[in-house]
Image 1 (tube, one colour):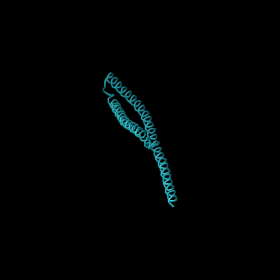
Image 2 (spheres, rainbow, N blue to C red; image 1 turned 90 degrees about the vertical axis):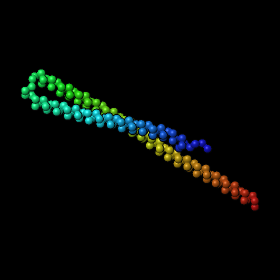
Image 3 (cartoon, rainbow, N blue to C red; image 1 turned 60 degrees about the vertical axis):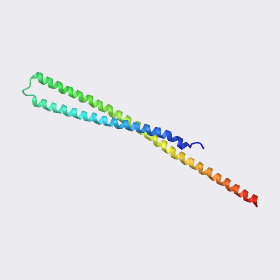
Image 4 (cartoon, rainbow, N blue to C red; image 1 turned 180 degrees about the vertical axis):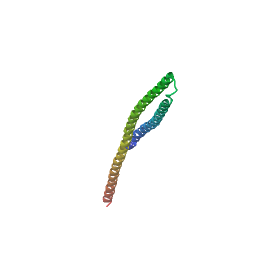
Length: 150
């Protein structure tokens, strides 16, 4: 007898599971990277705030060129914060895209599993009908033999 449709779909299911797992792993790794980038942003902001506060305390008794250098450094820190904010925003958008890709793969796998269950049910119904037909044929043959022997 030919292999059932449900069994043939197992190959498709295993491929869908593999794709879903790969998407989940990629999503997990990207989430971890985003957390690291967010931490770095917080650290940059804290660092910039500390220097800004220190600049206010140092205004007295500091030379003009030192103040200019200090202000320039704080400006560069703020630029680094802005760049890191943009990076975190880009990564957040990409994370949302990866989450959507995973959801699509997850739904595809679930749909294939549901299809396999339906196909197994249909295969069972066909097998039951076939068995019933064979039993009916055997009963009819036995009844015919009994008639022939009497």
